[in-house]
Image (cartoon, rainbow, N blue to C red; front, side, top):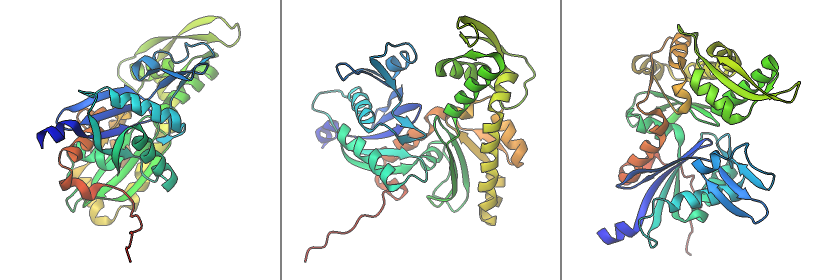
Length: 347
């Protein structure tokens, strides 16, 4: 039996828009890489996946295509998603005969049946024998240590790369939820647009992300932070450097942050009264990369009047939740979100 378990492994996959993480049973998190792939269009050969591919963004000749195959939490390029997943699944393999028996994948709320099927098919084609789906907020809440199986409200906000998932969970199910296509990638686009309009400078997504992480904030800061940003001047076409301040980034992403705050309001307004009382008592928990934005918890707390805290290690909350499901599959089976399929009846 031990030999069987060593050859056939169960895994949890957080296939995110920005990063993909893989949890291997009894080993923990074994892969944490950007969801990026680089392909040579002349030879149709995958050159790099993950960190190596991300380094190539905006720095390659025309025949090399660097793509992010997931957009807003949904597969936009099925073949590249499959190839990327296949490469990532090869990395934790201890031996060539090892295979994956069961895979639990986290997906955003409110995916269509077609979108769910594409995620499932990508994992099956990449080498998994059986695929189960679970909603990202449920996995994140489990990973954050919230009592999601109890008859009390757990309000989780998962701000990822492509989507922000807001959900009130009770008794292992989602009571009220919202999914916005406003998250880390939208913040980057806001910064690119702001730098273009304000400084007449063209910058790429990696530079915008660097500015967001280095000086970004949701509220005014006591200290003044500035970081040099380099790009191409729209007027002269020559390289130029500017100083990007924290208030510049705050102004750039203010509209996107407002839409997240408004959605949190809507979720709380639709929450049943008894559970709303639980939210006030238990507070709100944030996870995902967006939760690391300076002062975002302070902004939400001010706007909602509810205590807000950031989960421990918010970037891995979802995959840690998946890990708990993988390690104790039978105890968490009711959390899985596989739709009912028609029964086969033998007459």
